[in-house]
Every structure is written in structure tokens, then in C-alpha cells.
Length: 326
Image (cartoon, rainbow, N blue to C red; front, side, top):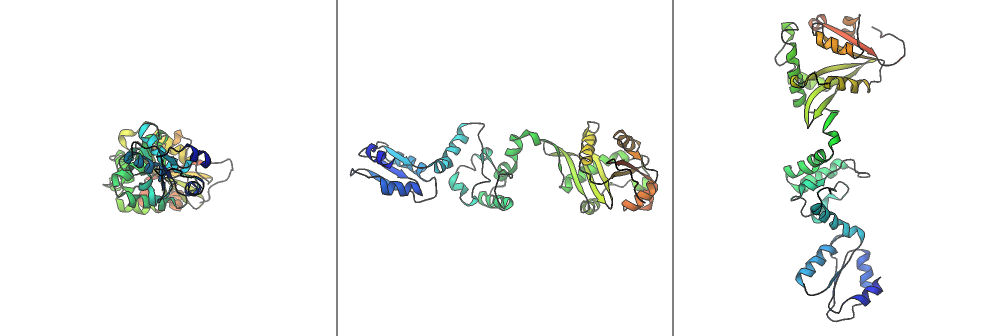
């Protein structure tokens, strides 16, 4: 190939070679047989030759310019051209060394809506470390919001609505205390606080259990907690925003929890006067447990007054016929 290039180069050509083997091959195997011919070797990282050849052509528009590069070096740049040209082409940057990203893609900030950080990119060690380095490099919170989350959220609609881990206590607090408004005038007045669950209490609860939420367009609409205690699993703090109730969200959250239980029984405690909650769980196969007070004392840490005014519903999660020991 270098022999053929030697024969084909015009007398006034400029040859621009990329780093690595491209430089080695052209430097050793391409002969410049005319005084006006020029040879420029990459002095930077892989992919340097392509933009350099464009610069050479701009500087010498009347002279033929030849770029000698490989597929890797060329794709560093052609990918960005495709991103700018085609609406449905995006670049996943999580597999690239963070340090030189702005050299590879100098217009990354300007075209922030076309770059993604795919956290499941195969074979990338220390994914959180890479993300932090890119964040420090970009130095723009709005740009990183687009690259690190928003672009993928808008592009992949399958996770715009569904059940995911809920970890933002402020969001959980809002859902719990809004949904708990249904208790007003129903449960004993001395148990109906305002807010129903203070942030301090929620913070302590979150240390003992895992919350899952039903999200739609990034908004938390419903929440359910799961806590494994001794030989059973408890449903804790299941609430739906009032304006989103009776739309099947509670049923979806409950079905999700039931698929992720590894104990024989799944129990839920609720107020004895909250008949709608009792009916909901019964509809999904739960039964009122006769030994409710004993179960509340064994598996929950709640005041005696709450035990007096509560009940327990349970559902056996497998076919093994044994009883919960109390």
C-alpha cells in the first residue's frame, strides 16, 4: 500500500500520517520523490491525522492532501460527524478514557444532547470513578445532567415508567405523608400525627428496610417498603399519592414485592379501621391473621396503642405447610 501511495502522490501533495503504525509505515515505506511534497507526522494522540489533514487543506487549498490513518483513529472523528449529521445517532462515552474526552470530542458541550454515559458499558472498570472524572472535566452541571442521565432517559422509553429502587428520602416523605391523609378521621386521633411520618422517623426506618417506588417521568407516585425480620418478610409503608390512587399502582408494587420474597410468609400490618387497605390486601390473596397481636409484638417495633388499633394480614408464599411460630 505504501508503495502504491508513493507512486500515486502528486508532486505537490501533503501527506498527513496518524500516530502509531501509520507513522511507522509511512515514515519507513513511503518515498517523497518531489521537492514540493510535504510529510506531517502525528505529534498527538490517536486520531490526530484526520483533523490535521483538514487543517492542512484549509491552509493549502490548492494542494492535494492525503490522510493516512486507521479505522480506530478515523472513528474517533467520523462518529462525531455522524452525531451532528444524523438525528438518531448518539455516542456512548463511558468506554473511553475520560482524561482526553474533550480532545476527542471538542464539541461535546455544544452537542450535549447527543452524548450518553452508559453505565452498563461492557468491561469498564470503576464506572463511578470514570463518571466523576468526566464530571470534573466538563465542569458544567447542566451538561452532565444531559450526558449522565437525561439523554438516556429520553432515548430509552422502557424505563420512563416502572418500578425501581427509591432512595430519595424527600420524595418518599412526600408520598408517604400525602397518601396518609386518607387516615384523617378514620384512625384514632391520638395516632394521626401531622406530618404522619416525620423525616427523622423515616430516616431511621430507611436504615432497616429497602424502599421501592413506582416512577413516571422521574416522578415518584407510589412507594412500598420491604423488611426481612427473623423468619418472615414485612410490607412496610405502602402509600400512593392521592391523585394517582385507583390506577393499579398499588397492585403493581405489591406484585413486585411478592416476586422478591424468600420467606414462607409475607405479612403486612395496617390500621383495623382502614377497611379499604384490608380489602385491598384481601383482594390480592392475603388473609387476616388470627394471632395478629402476637405477630405485631414479634415482628414490629411499635407502641402498645398502635398494636391495640392494628391488624395483620398474611400470605403464604410457597406450598410448604407450616405455621409461623409465635
